[in-house]
Image 1: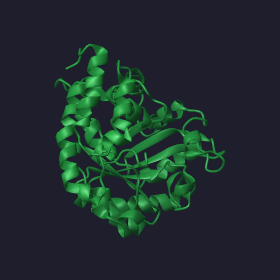
Image 2 (image 1 turned 90 degrees about the vertical axis):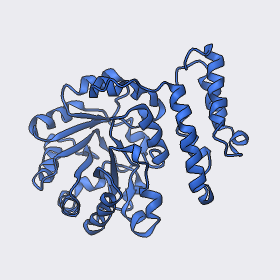
Image 3 (image 1 turned 180 degrees about the vertical axis):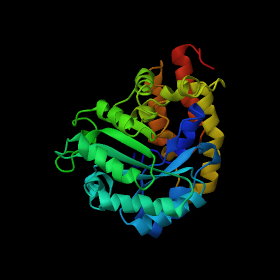
Image 4 (image 1 turned 60 degrees about the vertical axis):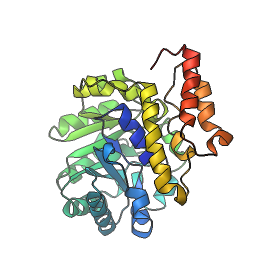
Length: 322
């Protein structure tokens, strides 16, 4: 989710679900060691529980960045061994690390030794033409042996050459049964499944076999999908915010962010781009997206533009949602 699940996106999603765990976009160790730490790690208290997803392959660098994550208040450190992007492969991390199990073990151990919060790993079920269940079972087993107990498994192989990241999300077949089998073989681990899950019913189905479900792009493009999660999966009966209430709650947040970071180049569009799917399926949704994407309307950096977009939905729907 590079360039997608930034802090503004996560704050917005937290308004919809109070309990769902949120993960950062993958942050490389180089970006933290040589770049602007605050830009990559700062977040709002409301985002908890939140995990910092790291990309890297040098144990000492990962340990340093994990310590930074704990100092900044993250609840979990996650090592990404699932991203198939060539951009990531050039840095020798992501899914290509699944071919270097001893190195991954050293990385996980270094992170664990550096922090006293949860450490997890995200990976695929295989790489390229390696389809043997034994491969992913043994990969997990080696990491299990150094104490890691949280595994997020994308139920597809990663094709490192010849497929784009988008194609890697669509072309390699989903094999949920392999992830279910991993849960059977590692019953004391927290196993989360990822890949191709887009509906609440699918989430409920998978929770019969595993401990959790990670949803990425489906939740981004249809964020209000998460509105039922608190009650259905966490037993939290607190009334959820309506779409309109979520949008209205974003206005003071945006005002604050623009006042704090506007001088550093933060623009309204950098936040509204995450909101475009909020009205998916509603009358007026297209006009809503048009207003929040209009460069001329966005130029003044006035968060009240959200109210104009909301009014377009109200007009189309007969003002039925308050």
